[in-house]
Image 1 (cartoon, chains in turn red, cyan):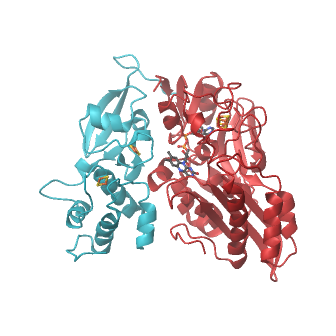
Image 2 (cartoon, helix red, strand yellow):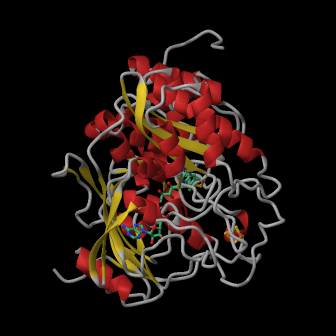
Image 3 (tube, helix red, strand yellow):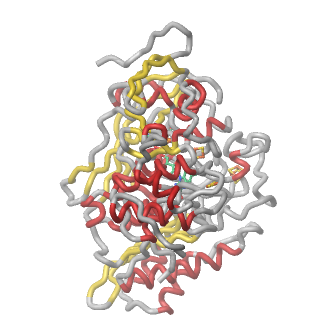
Length: 338
Length: 174
Ligand SMILES: Cc1cc2nc3c(=O)[nH]c(=O)nc-3n(C[C@H](O)[C@H](O)[C@H](O)COP(=O)(O)OP(=O)(O)OC[C@H]3O[C@@H](n4cnc5c(N)ncnc54)[C@H](O)[C@@H]3O)c2cc1C
Ligand code: SF4
Ligand code: FES
Ligand code: FES
């Protein structure tokens, strides 16, 4: 690991100033992604700014009936929080589908949003990679790309965002609270992560020195009509090949509104509002779920090794919508898909 | 309050204190020293194992303020002031921790390399209190790989201790 200096600010303002004043300074929270990347020399910050002692560890009620989750609430504390389990079970479920007990204890809400891709080439400094070294090329295109994107990729990068939690946050339409050198702002979740385009080095729309202080959720919805369905190479402790967060508002046997977000398929959690609109006013049926899946995947493009993901995603979307409509969400400890 | 800055004898080193298995240690560490390396290389507490150094195996699992984490991905300097429990702090050869006794009783290992991490992880999982079924134990212990494949007996050992707090002698389980 490349040596670095260490500072431990005692306020958000100090932390933001410490990172903002140096292009090579970085925040560190749980460290479960950053320390790993530093060990591979993928990340080589000269200063680490330890934010773990800042008072951002509470989950508070918000005026709009929602909650505000502090950026330093651990993934485990968030998933097992009584109110989150009761009102946002989709979020609990997605978090518990990810990583391991130990990692969820260490990982933070903010860090989860900012975790980087698991693309093999990104991790291997002996290979080119446009995300790690802009302009050097993308060896995943035409290379080994089983885990890569089928939607929204560019000729510069076909990486995926690996988070499970963020897929649920996309479906729940969370808002990210940020404090930076220029003050505070709020970023709707759909605008937080970005597609690679010709700037794959930017995973998201944060500016250097901006810190995530909280993630806010709107008032609860969907009732029992939600699910997080994650498909992967082994039954636990593996990243998603394809995952689906689905939530349906239902009344009198009909879908009044729908939210569908996909993980493992794009540079960001993937939502398609037109496909969601297709479900509005419909009674749940295999035909309408298939139509929604087809719509979401209409522009899907395989890269070779990951061609299988298109069909897998189609079936995962349909199954997730069936689970959500029936009010029988996937149980993460239960490995059979119901 | 001003930002904390650190002064110490050697350049790059930062003074921290850690209570490890009940004993207070005052240490000077470089910021890039992992908790795992500090335990093994500096303090010679080699019960905690390094399997991957990347959070992928769980062999390095220890308890920090009672919570299980991967010590390979934790920077020691960030744990300043914490209480750390390693496998050496759980029991002694004459007085085994119930989980240690259960692992022996159930043959829950072959080479033993993953065992300290498995046991620390199981202690953490039990205090978290979210596992009651066998499927839940398996899911919540998935962060600990066992290359020897002793999983069935590991779950037996944990289930046994969860049921009555001490291992029971059992006929061939599965
Ligand atoms: C073996 C393994 C398996 C995993 N499996 C899964 C999985 O299946 N699903 C899944 O979703 N995740 C998985 N993860 C990833 C894990 O969820 C992330 O590593 C974790 O959420 C990152 O959080 P952290 O607090 O540790 O972040 P850190 O490592 O501390 O930071 C990550 C990045 O975020 C930045 N950062 C941290 N906090 C803030 C903040 N408040 N504001 C601005 N920037 C910030 C840091 O500068 C850094 O760039 C896995 C990780 C490992 C090692
Ligand atoms: S897919 Fe993106 S992250 Fe992977 S090698 Fe190509 S540019 Fe790098
Ligand atoms: S050594 Fe820490 S998880 Fe493998
Ligand atoms: S006993 Fe050998 S790795 Fe688990």
